[in-house]
Image (cartoon, rainbow, N blue to C red; front, side, top):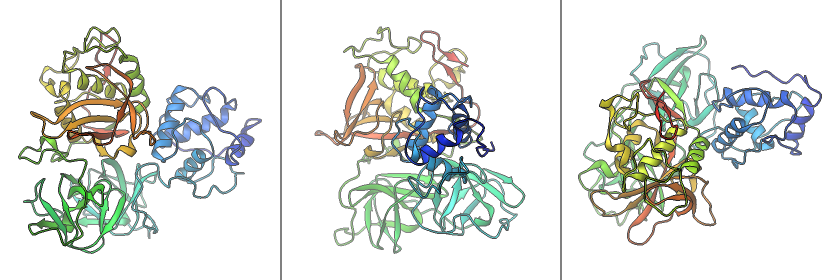
Amino acid sequence: MAIPKITGSGPNSRTNLKNIHSGERSFQKDLSTTHSQISLMQQALTSLGYNTKGTDGIFGDNTASAVKSFQRACNLTADGYFGKNSLLNLEKLLGHHLDPDADGCGDTGSSGSGDSGSGDSGSGDSGSGDNADAAIQVGDTVITTKPAVYFRKEPDGSYHMKVDKGTTMKVTAIEDRGKYKWYEGVISGKIGYLRGDCVEKYTGSTSSDSTIQVGDTVITTKAGVNFRQTPGGSRLAQVDKGTTMKVTGIKDSGGYKWYEGAITGEIGYLRGDCVEKYTGSSGGSSSSGGSSSSGGNTGSSNDFTDIVTTTPTVNTYYTYNADDAVKYAEEHSTTLDSSSALDPKRNTSFNESPGRACANFVYQCLLAGGARMFDGWCYQLSGIPSSWSDSAWTKTNQGRRRLLEKGWIERIDKEQVHRGDIIYTYKEGEQPTPFKHVTIAVSDYIPSKQGCEVCGHTQSQNHAFKLLTPQSGGREAYCYHVLERLGGDGTEKAIDLTNGKSKAI
């Protein structure tokens, strides 16, 4: 959607945006009167993927929800007040001011709307305009040839992040926009595009030693290796050659294996071509120090780890709205201390037998937020193929595995928890699974309390406080962010969640 520049069509149109630029006011729910300005903001947010569900100039619930999602993505306080910092970030992503008379907006706030890049400076995806190798086809892997390349949400659109030179990506689609070809793929769980003059076809090996398993120790084989927050994501630190790390998880992303572990107390990932299996004593090297909260069962089963070996087919995507998920959680949970499925607030379309209520409830909340049922992750409702039925719906760890394999959730640190994320309770050594309970966060992380508020079932929880620090007895919280863009193959089913009458739409 093309975003028009403001023309001063209303009596207060210029004044309102100039006042926001100067920090003197903000747009907020039910208190803004200049429709032309709010409509312009709605158009801009919607064009960037934050759907206000209308551009009517009214700051209602849908607009407030979109503003909060945008603020979270920009690492701003998600208060729903569209003020100076929100406007500056929005204008920066658009590439122009909404108000032509506004002063320069500077670099306040986040430089991107999603995960930040490594922080490397550079020209981004600027270049000569030459297209990439014409031989690149869907299914090929490309590699970035420049530092700080923009990984964009749409061709020539706003960007998720900046990626380093040498980042690889499997091509899932190609768009020819005349001057450039744009290559679609997935980096760090996000669907986006790399510009043709910034990549080339990659034919080398991106895999590391296939013998490396969870529980092994790896050692870096190069100097200045990036230790990243997520596979291909923002850089936590650069580590020296000879640094060792115990592997607590393995992921396939961007044509590489990524090894999860802890270094100097931080959980992150090392890329497979920068490490090898280490069999000596790690005592003399720059060791990982501390233990990863990802822990997990290091036995033969991958079921207790975040290893994802599948590459889901993605030809469409759905939007997850955290506020909608939280609203459902609040409406269908209760403070009653009961495990009974007879609680009238519970959605009776979903049979919550004792011991199976927690996962059942949380996955309902995800559906309310815009997730969809799919083969292998479903509850038998009207309109759902019987062949899809899977017990993952009622089991904490099986459901977690299905969502990881789908690419809809990613592991995060506790400080990154926001409303609408999900939290699993993990107890080391428990059988048959250490994943004992799951809830949905209904508040952002509260630093002063080191936890957040949650809603959940089995034992009814409504805005109950959940401590996210490790507890005695091996109990800790596994925190997962639900992505705002959920990739799918188009067969997924939306669900009408009417209490007692839920069905596929």
